[in-house]
Image 1: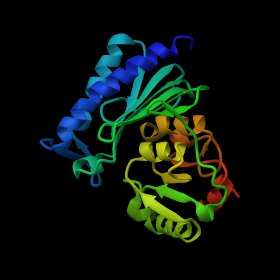
Image 2: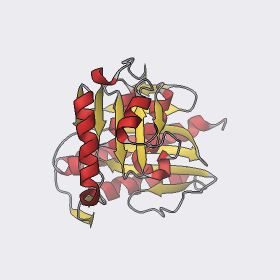
Image 3: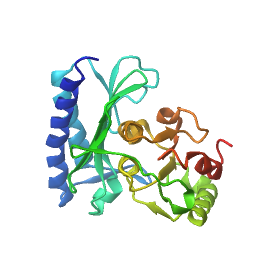
Length: 264
């Protein structure tokens, strides 16, 4: 696309407009409903999503949306332009006043990510990447870390909302292995930010299963453009709709997948 800049600039403005909603409700006054026992949605999620969709639909009515709260989610084989949006990635953190959450949005053309944006309205950290042009934090180019071995790596993870109790033993076992072999393991509660923190070298790797496209669409591109590697647990490229993802600085990727039990 030769005119990618107009899509990016419109998206950037929509994200900043939406962030004002999140900052307002972060102080309180929102209602909470539960989509499932461990999966909440707030007033802020819904209003943020509605505003971004309305702003972008006004400028680009031909582009469809795949989003967490209000969109048709059956877009796996979509061949045209598609926004993939999470109005608040880290809703539980948001609800509890923990300032680790973000707006995450990417524009895809079929299976190709054109650009991605992840923005934390509290820290004011604006991560973005445009395909082939690198990754940036507040306008400054970022790169993954140069750490070569797992024992000196800081790893981050998350736990899925669905089927957690069923898979708890396996998840805790993998967590334990990383805790034994890495320098440390963290769990922050926002997959989009976890990916961005890999991209800028704060973490060497991030793994999680049970993820949705809107959790990872923007962050995965940011990691790749920062020089990292993103795959599913088998080492392949099916992470967007496949439900499992490992992102790294590339140097620890093979070893980490062995621990997870995927590619050997």
